[in-house]
Length: 302
Image 1 (cartoon, rainbow, N blue to C red):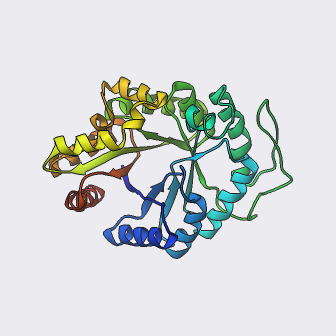
Image 2 (cartoon, rainbow, N blue to C red):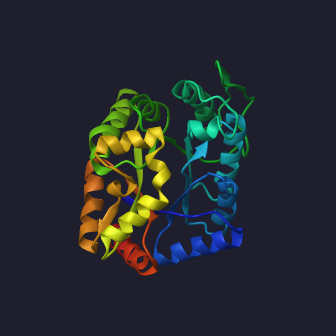
């Protein structure tokens, strides 16, 4: 299982460059960043990846409702050229509270919307001509968007429900999960997406799992702080469903907390469950984070 770090891109660009440099110096070259309400992550990646050419960078995730697939494909292919072909484009549906409540866009039939979106986006990312006429997504291109000669970015779909996982396995390169514990990866996520990819004759999919993690001597305090800071995720329907599958009361119950040995064992369990990559959402204080970074490096070297 590959190891990555969730990198914050909020704040001034110079600070993000400093974070990337610091993580790189620690030995991490795989980084995932969210696209929520801060800077445009793909634009930030173009700068960071141009500065540090050995970084694998991924969006976790870009919501699709505010970007036509034509625009997103052109942007992703341009960033891919800028950073030397090391981009993974993670996309997702966001949540009804955001899409309807903040953007004023319908959230009806999200799975069918994603299906139509992928029908347009996936071939566009490969530089192919597209003519798609769907109920909600239509697109026509005359040739490659953005740079004409660039490696196809990886395409992953944030998927938790069965239909979405099947779609990710059939039309994309894999999935990204959040608030999804080891048991649920093993019994639901990995089997569903792997079966869909096999049925479609596609390579084994990537399963990128992100969870809170901390090597700490005070698990109870760390979990209390994680539950407080991530409380909203326990109320969003898609994540709540995954927590319920796991038998987890709150976000901290699916985290990876404990001594170095205990966290290494939990990482091993996650790999055995079917995760192909772990993106660490760092928790705890400064000393705990240093110990957690060292533990992740130790796992990475095994």
